[in-house]
Length: 86
Image (cartoon, rainbow, N blue to C red; front, top):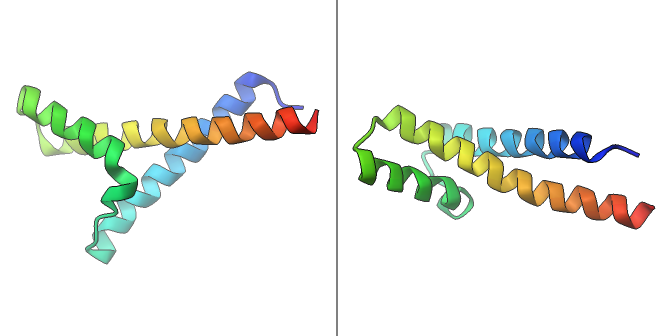
């Protein structure tokens, strides 16, 4: 059985992959998946409103927040599978 630290690393990797896919899919399709990107977009808008920062930093903040949001969901699912298999 994987340890809690390993589950956390796997969940963070899954969150980063999902966030990257959402970020990459937006350019070729010309369609923003705002319902899936909502946590990160909200954080980026708060950042831009508070500091008037650059767009690149706003995109980076959106990516990180989305990665953490999806990592939390992956962590819960993986932990539930671990608990059920024990």
